[in-house]
Image (tube, rainbow, N blue to C red; front, side, top):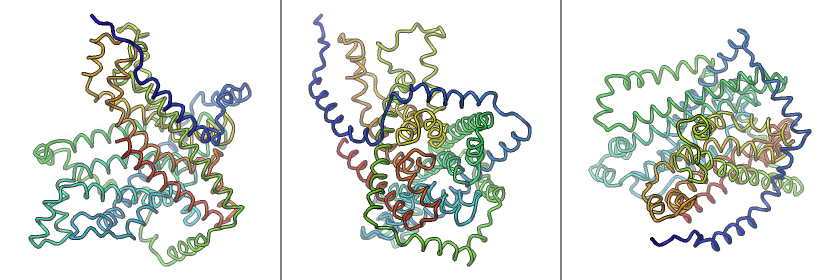
Length: 537
């Protein structure tokens, strides 16, 4: 049998690629102030060890558990009510912005621009602004989710409708049907599963977002966690973190079940309407109504003349951004810092996510998987990576940023580490699914040909899954740029720190400049990510 050379035939091109990436990324690592030694600094380890030591034992008093249960229900209600408001906003905007069913492909620039504005400003920023208008409480969280997620849902709804076959819509329009009827009968039945699946996924994301918004006073578990952290009450913080994890797992399981039910064949879904699905359809409006009632939000109270005047006066203060050259330079430095935090955090998360995904997807290279099956020592390396992603992503980025700031000090490196920890959990799960779905034939052929060690994975499995892995990473980067823009609220640098300081001082003109910079940076990353996906695809 002919021996197979173990030399990498693409080693030279890979080396040049790595060197080019290092040259391009080095300034971003510098801007993020990456200092790995700070993690192992004795003083920092002592501080974080003392802080984490206070987490034990978790708080279990009946009074606190009752407060925790109330905050958990409030978080679920904020997510449900906010997504309902987002849906009401997204449907007309998607209809106006989408080219589906139009005789001419002319689009509404106002609708498109409004969708960009709504989703470009992070929900935490909207929440902070609404807290200034309506005061502390869940009203600010519901409105913030409604606006940001309305922009996200509207964009995706429009793209889903535009991706459908045009023949049914064209036939209905030629037969005399109006555009709304053509969409209702020609597009909606074809897109119902995808629209429903994405909406359910966004509800799952809204639960995590509602936790984060509590850090600026928008109610729920986040507000309770913020109070516990400020009071250095580790026992309460531990109980709240455990609740975060349980809530995230339950939301994931429920979301997965709902999406699987949408994947049934049409006949099966129709049959199921007589049972659990019908109950779900009936429970949906009841859950939305119960959420608004629990939060004591009266929509009629938000539509009064006084509320409109308050919002208008507050918005008017932001119509004249500060364009002083010195301030613009500070904002530009903050934008560069935010970009660096998002890039470094996403790259670190991609490496950690791949390591977590390998054993989950049963694609671990042989050189990494030499434990004997059937023993705990052999199972532990496979068990931990399946648990760690859920634990990492169940803790919101702002909580991670609070902990990493204690571990490495205030600044952008703390923000990058916080993003990396949370995103590693997200990408670990997504990467595992992508690797598990990769056909094993190429890797098996390489093993049969005599290739050993990591070569079958590197040249058989990874190239097949790489486009999907890159797409997941770029999509996550688009989300991380928005979160990186607000991590400064807890001292992690970037635009968020500038915005938090200026709003605290009621410097609305300067805050307006920062918000515009956030919007432009988010839009630039969205466009850049889309171009990278097309180029790599």
